[in-house]
Image 1 (cartoon, rainbow, N blue to C red):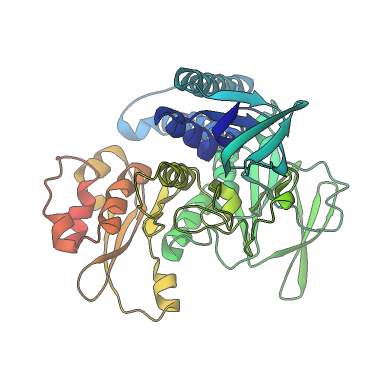
Image 2: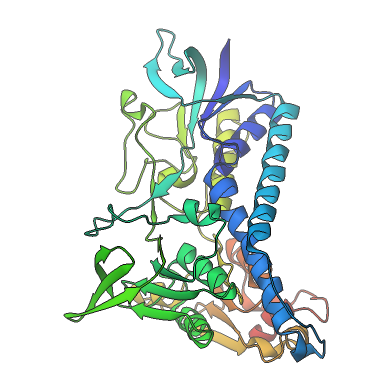
Length: 449
């Protein structure tokens, strides 16, 4: 059988592409060497959020007295927290499997290898001692953890996010190398669990790419909770539980029972025969056009492997764009104008559109509308002694350029801002909608005046 579409990689991009293609009547085959759901579902987005919610419940219980509720002897069972995380993942993987079956997607568990083109111009893929053919190929191979050449690292039993999620024992102390999204989420979790946490970030502030002012505020909040930050520091060597760091020529050492490496991820472009096709690569990954098509007309690439926006929700939209182009029903181009970014710490931080730093670097004129989250009655009612910020960036014509939020539930509110930016709304347009009261979402209307 010659399939209409073959997809390599069953993460958010892969399983979305398979489902959408099959739903539109295309015969689809999906290859995955590990588990359905990819990194996001099995060792990324979902399991970390499961752990972070347990941590949030624990934080809430410990702070119950602020809400006139007495809770005594607050404790937690770490192995059960991990077991619950596993249960959540298992349930969602099963859900994807059912969806693939319902759509008629052929799922193959094995390591796919592209072997090239057939005489008829179809793509040939070998897997589990069988060869499959397809008219179109969508590559969704994802990304992998970057492992920097730090002296002593290879001789150390370090963690990546995968090992950190699999542990059943809570470390007494942990050193996190990298203060990006992954590093900060794990720092938040282990801090709530009572571990001593150290975060090392080579840049001058945590969460590069997010609004710097809000990132600084979040760092200050976690510093008050006992997390120790070393911004502007470079890791120079690792020797067992001792990490050597350097700043301005001065060397320091940090001790930690566990070492978590989270300095970033890079696209997976090797190991599945991509070189047999001669697909053009960019500096960061596989080069694609506005429809996610590679330099070959019947080969598409979606998700982290493009290196454009390494986020699960971006991957889903890229997959939808690719399938629509294959179907020839929609010429809508992929837009990266309003891709939300969220850090699921407690409090959450989220942003969409341009940051002040990006606008300044581009030499663009903008104005700032900024108010504390305490201007929302609902926020005050639910966040005793909590603070936060809503920052909105506008151009000369009052068109929204960026929105950045610190405070719960920023992850839910940022969608509203993203829609407004994608649609090119002006301040008065977004403010003209009726927001239910009392909600934290009203903060957007309040900030816009």
